[in-house]
Image 1 (tube, one colour):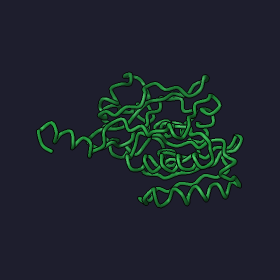
Image 2 (cartoon, rainbow, N blue to C red):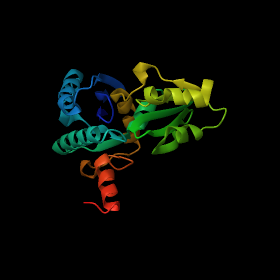
Image 3 (cartoon, rainbow, N blue to C red):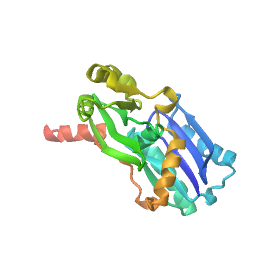
Image 4 (cartoon, rainbow, N blue to C red):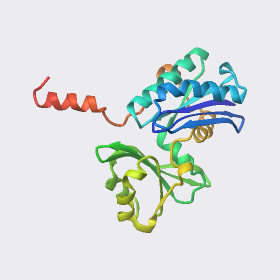
Length: 236
């Protein structure tokens, strides 16, 4: 099985190549560079270093969101263009699940949080056990306090994602020693983690035609919200 995994849903642009259980190449950039400038050269690089031609791929995995609206559109357009050119399917992977999968085998509940602005986070929660990777709370947009309140009073939770620096103080104040935080190298989306998880999804038949793929935004963009507000106020 040969899978190219890409993600541009958050701060990091990343690409990796998975071949029969091995990550052959993995590259990421988290330096405030525009994803549209770095993603295609990054894909060329990991495929070249992995010794895999695009036509040899079985599928392309892509972070489907939630996340940056612009980043998601860049990732979607890139994945769809490549898959349509080689007639291969897309494996949609939740951007929150990608963060959580960095922490595979963690004994605690894993709660990725991405900064959604307006004092909200994109979040979900997951657990790893003998039966594999389980979704506890489905992806949603909500306030950080609502996110925290979903956990039991004695539950230990591992937080990760770009929302951690923004909301760490609030989390610590409400949860105390029950809150744990992923180290920097496991804190953001990682294409290698996306590729490994995507391989599981592919084996279960969870892939789609590239023409059908749409990013998952979870809420309206700022421009759409402002338009609806103007319409509600009787303005054009």
